[in-house]
Length: 340
Image (cartoon, rainbow, N blue to C red; front, side, top):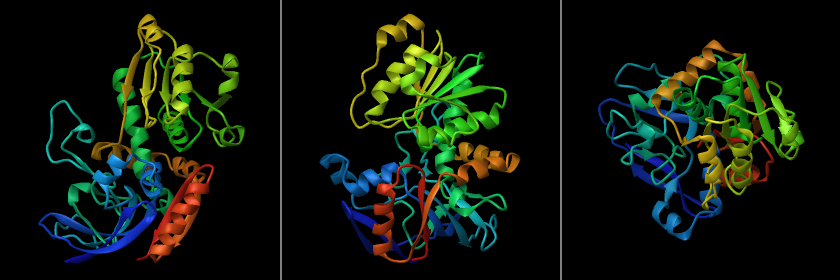
C-alpha cells in the first residue's frame, strides 16, 4: 500500500514523501492520533547535531513517542479502532544477556529510521500494545518517555544495594519529573529527594522532597541517585551526586550529552560507587508502564501536569508550528493531535 511519510530533509524542512508499505503477515496498520515531541526530535529539527550525524540520519520522519488507532490487524489481536501505543524499537535479534534496546543491530524510530510522522504506521504486532481504558490521550502520547524512566528504575532494582531509604533525582525537567514519580509510585515509603535549579519547576514535584542544587548542603545524603539533566548541566549534576551519595551507592545516568562529561573518578573509587547508563526501553518496559497506569490511576493525573500544549496538525505548516512552540516552552510536553 502507498503511504505518505513526512520526512525531515534538512533542519526545519519537512517534506511529504510517497512510500510503499509492505503489509507483511503479522503486521498491524495503525493510524497515529497523538504524537509527542522529544528533545531528540528537536535536536534533529533545529540542526543541533553535528553535520556528520545529520548527513547520516536525514532524510527521516521524526517522532518516537506516539499512540494511534488500529485500522487493520490480520492477526486478530486488536479490534479495528482499538487505541494502542506504538513501540519505536525494532529488535532484529535476541540476546541472553543484552536487552533489545542495547543491541547494536536494533533499529529505533526517529534515529536513522522513519519515526511516526506518517499517514499510517505498519508495525509488527509485537510492537503494538493496547492502552488501558480512560487514559488521557495527550498523556498516553508520551508513554514511551515514561517507559524509559521505568526501564531505568528496573535496572536500578537489579544493580543497587537494598538500602534505599533516600534516593535522589537530579533534574527538574520532564525526565526528572517522571523518574521521581515512578519511584514514588513503586516505593511509597521511600524518600525521593529531587534536586533542581528552578523553584517554579520544583513546585510541580508535589509527591517528593525538593531542593535547589545551590542549597544541597541542607538536603539529606542519598543512598542512590538518578542523573536526569544531560547537556551542560550533567557536569555539575554528576559532580554534586558523587559528593552527596553515600559509599557503595548506585548512580543511574539518564541525561543525554553531546560532549564528553568529566567524572571525578577519585571519589568514585574512594566510595566504591556504581555508575550505569540507561537509555530507551523495550517491550517489557512498556508492559510494566501500562500495568502501572492500570494499578495506579493517580500517576496519569500527575503526568497531565506535563502536557504543556496540544497542537492540532493537519498540514506541514502545523508541524513546523508545533516544533516552534515546543522550542519555546520552559517545561512539559508538546503533543501533536495528528490529523493528516
